[in-house]
Each structure stands twice: as structure tokens, then as C-alpha cells.
Image (cartoon, chains in turn orange, red):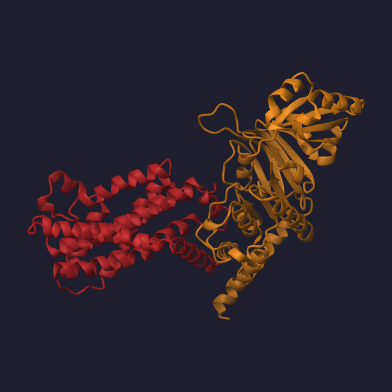
Length: 344
Length: 248
């Protein structure tokens, strides 16, 4: 090793030590968001409005909200891609507006539609990202090969990402995010376009990743039923504001006096069922031919029997009864249904 | 960031640019050859053969080749990166934006070289002329390529969307080919057109290339060379300034 290379290595090690010292500061939140607002030019309503949050080390933190709720703007502010109109974002106690380099050192961000590196193969895309994040060449190569195998991309290892299916493309995006082992992951809709088996795999891997390395994961997702098992704390956003914040269990307790009856209606009976449910309190059409009815626990059996007898079982493909979910919390707090595709 | 890191990152970005085009280099090569060779054919056989010297036709066609590869390519690349959020990916890595601008332009220089050189050699054969290629030619081609790719890059980072960038670049391609003595001598052009051409890098690149073909290295040659150097530096800085990036 030449003197120049040794000095370069020493400098890299010192920089690494400095970052680790920063990460291990006692009492320091991973993210502290203070009174953050954003008003885009030529708009009258702020995309987000006076948001304050604190995200602790090792948390899996969820951001829930429907279209236009302000989630994507908030995420872009958290990775320093969008400047707030007022307020500030602290990462490990440092203002990212003053220390923008901290994002590149500490945060791996996966956007909702990753379009970078489409003409590279999965292995190359992971390798280059790892190498640019500071991994040594051989380490980055080994890690790329490992992640390709781990995420089941071995068969398409030599194909350009552009030619992969939507699900495989997303898995490449996740592997790119994980390379170089950064302490914070921000994932915008990580399970979009994935089939159920892949979705389960993704959630399991994220749970393991969080447990093994004490990593902080910030998730934006509309897939609340699946995310519910992963998320520790959640911020529910509506119209640019945080309308609910806390542990999933705590938020559920607020509406736990209810059970939910979910009806999956046969397409040919949609109009008749709609007519029946129009007169039922707290009945919401979640999606076409899918209804949710919140029912008080007291007297729930009679109420369910009454609703099913009016709707008639032969008009249904399926029905389910369950206790409050995160989706119910969302509906109770915002009065809205979570959309399939979420963007702010 | 250590001293070696910018080089390492530049090299990664440069390789990514080359890899981006490895699946479609054939189309790019054909694009960079067809227009200049067709223009050469028409100007030589159908046009007035006394109007343009072989050096004028060769240098002009080399510039046309670069216009159709580097200017078009960087415009499309930067507008794609901007429109589809690719810049966000780079902006969240430890990548300085100046290095990304340089790497994209360097990538297009390398990709345009085969067609540019082939244009010259095919042109020499077609026109039946024979002259030595000066070492300064190999300094001038990168300078010319960077000046045109920087214009494309500027369109790419400034146009409102991908389609608008394509339209603006198509218009600019014809302006850079037709305004100024690129293919046609200055004395054959309307005065206003010849005057406006002085402000375009394509004119200075074509004039300087003619100098290397003729072996004339006078004050005018070095003025054209100097213009290109200053234009390239200013244009790259301006593209970097204009490009959306992380704040701070």
C-alpha cells in the first residue's frame, strides 16, 4: 500500500469514527422534525403544515396517509430534496440544511418509483451504489452478489433492470437501499407491485434487518394491514397535518370499542347492496364492491346478524368480522379511506 | 470526503453512463453517422461543389455528427433524469453534482468518438482528400464535444419536461448546423446569419477543426480554441448551477 493510499485510508477511518460518534450520541433522536411547513409556489394550501415529530433509534416508524396528505413532501424534506418554507429537520441532532452531507452518510432512501440505473444489471446497480456510498470495491462486489441471491434475483442477475417485472424492479430498489448498511432506511411504498409471497418476504426481511442491526426504518405505505405487524409507531397524515401519532396499539385503543364488518360484494349485486347500506350508520365503501361497517361491541352480534340478513349472503363473495385495525384508526381519524396508490 | 473519493465517484458515474448506453450504442452510432454522411453526400453531389472546400465539408460534418450524438444525447439524458426522479437518487448519495455533470458529458464524449472519427475517415475517402491528422485534432474534438453536450445538458435541466427538451433540442440542432459557417463558408451566408454564428460554439469548433486539417495554427485558430475552452468551463458551471439538486 502506497503512502498516499495509507493516508487516504486514515482519513476515511477518521471520517467514519466521526460519523459513528455522531450516531451514538446519547439522547439524540434519529430525526427531530420541528414545526415543518411547505407551501409550494402558486398554491394556497400548504403541502404540510407545522409538522413536529421525533423518531428514535431502532424504531420502525410508519407514515400513513392518502393522496395529497403530504407524506411524500415530508419524506423529500427529510432527505433534503425539498426545502421547507419554515421549520427544520434535525438528523442525529444536526440540522440537515447546514450539514447536507449527513443524509448521504446516514440515510438510504428508496423512492416510490425508483427509475435510476435502469440500464444496469441488478448486481451492477447494487455494486455502484455501495461503492459510491464508500464501500471498498471488493466489499461492494461481494455485497452485491450476496444481496442479489438473498432477494431472489439470481435468475435475472445479468438482465438490465429495465427489462425486469415491476416486482423484481422493486426488489432491486430494496437491495440498493440496503447496500452499505446505512443506519436509517426511508422506504416509500416498498411493497407496491409485489405479489403476496414477495410482500411477506419483504416484511420479514425488514423486520430482521431492523432487529439485527438496530436500524431505524421509516415506512410510507398504504398497505396498512401488512405494515401493521412491522410498524412500532405511526404518524397519520391528512391534508398536510399529523392527525394521529403514537404506538399502533395506543391508537387502536381509541377506537377499540368497535368491531369491523367487511363485506366483499358480488359485482352483479353491487347496486342492491349499496342501496341497503346507504341507510346503515358508519358504513363506508372502501373500494368498488368492498364495504366496511364499524359496529359497537355492545350488541355487535345482533347488529351483524341484522346487516347480513338485509344484505343477504347470496349477494356476497365473502365477509369478515375483526377488531379495529390500523386502517380503521386511519378512517376514524381522517374520515378518509386509504387509497391504493399514495402520493403527495 | 478524502482526496481519492471524487476520482472514485467520478469513475463510477462515468462507467454508469457508459453502461447506460451499452444496449443502444448501435442506434446512437447510426444516428451519428447517417445525418452527417447524408449531408456530405448532398453537399458534394447535388449542391454547388465550389461553395465548400473539402476541409469545410469534413469539419462541418464532424460537428454535425457531434450535434446528433452528444447534444441530443445529453439533452435527453438530463431531461429524463430530471423528469423521472433519477437526480433524486444521485442527490441522496455522496455525489457532488458537478461530478455528475462532468461524468455524463464525458460519457457522451466517449460514445460519440467512434462515429466522429468514422465521419472524418469516411469523408476523407468520399471526398478523395488526403491530409495528416494533427495531434491538436484530438484536443479539439473533446472541446467541441463538451461545448455541444453542455448545450444539450442545459436544455435537459431547464426544459419543463422530456418532450419539450426534445423539441427545443431538435430546433437547436438545426440552428447550430445552419447558423454560422459550419457546413457553408461565411462568405456564402447572409451577413446576419454569419454574424450570429460567431456566438455559437459550433462555429468556433468547425473553424478550429479546419485549421487542424489545413495545418494552419495562427491567431484565429487559438482564438477559436480559447473560445471553446472558456465556453466549456462556463457552460458546465452553468449547467451545475441550474440543475435541481439537494438543497444546502
